[in-house]
Length: 189
Image 1 (tube, rainbow, N blue to C red):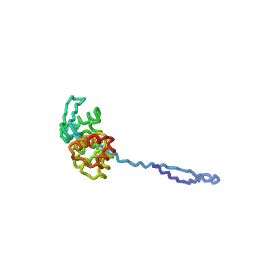
Image 2 (spheres, helix red, strand yellow):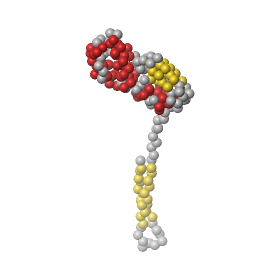
Image 3 (spheres, helix red, strand yellow):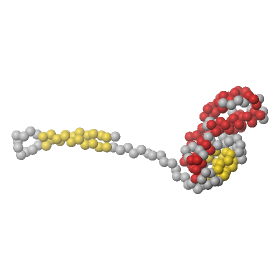
Image 4 (cartoon, rainbow, N blue to C red):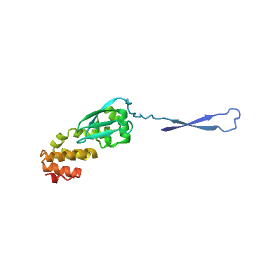
């Protein structure tokens, strides 16, 4: 922001009395700089191991493009440890693992460092899939509208299994799942 101050100075010259008085204008410009607080990411050690959980409804395999490391999660909620450096490689070379998401990182600082915090806030509501299917229809609808594509696939697979096992039989919930997930569950009933 710039402020302008106008100051008028009058000078009298005493050597010649017949000359008029001279007026000189001085304009001072003062600039005021406002410093903005820059939010910086916390520095995270790339060599620390972080717990990563599978949120797909089955086997999940990750093969690193950088090191060739193969990591296998055998089932839903299975946990494996990866370094932050490997997670950065995963984000750059195979982002679907983190963006769909197929994996959830259990360390909040690392999740923030990778830019996943906002997405994880929406996922908190579907921590346990079995509890999700027991929730009221209105609550299920709110959760389903926020889910990313990868978790929608996980929910649809789990819904199919629950219908086959006859543990999901509420027609209102089944219609809601069909509508929100764009799937046909009627052939399983």
